[in-house]
Length: 190
Image 1 (cartoon, rainbow, N blue to C red):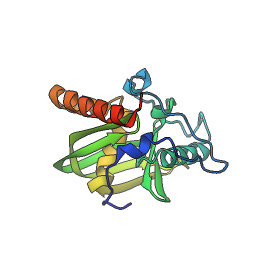
Image 2: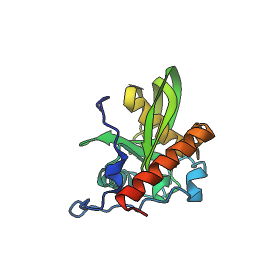
Image 3: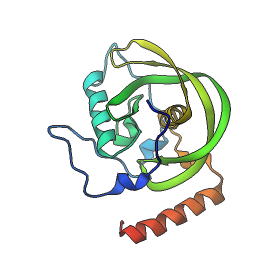
Image 4: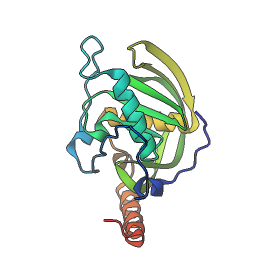
């Protein structure tokens, strides 16, 4: 996954997005939905609640449809410990993900599909070593830096019931919301 990605949440709210042929697309939940603040239970590969391959594929299609770089199951109303992230046709599904170690810090802008047009500067680890299960339940390890590390941490927060608005100071959040409201008014979005 490329570490050079432009940040543009306006794409997520454009109305002229076309649904891919024969793709199932999950509905995104609004930012005030209580599931976004719940910790997700471990995904049980011995007794999977859904087909993990099909579910991951639909999450990817949904993420692409809304022009995101990452999407968690709970953002679509599902209490599964899984998210996807990627660009173009290079996406990975992370079941039961966790950070094993981290290094450095960096403060950059982030957005979230559950909070359209709300850009906030968040401090996150610059480099992370992670573990997760793939859609077959196989344990995997990886190291991410840059935007990939940031995206992973953002989506992992969703798995723990943390939204990025909780990671900024109240004044920064107020300013971000005010800016978003002006932009939504300008774009005539309700």
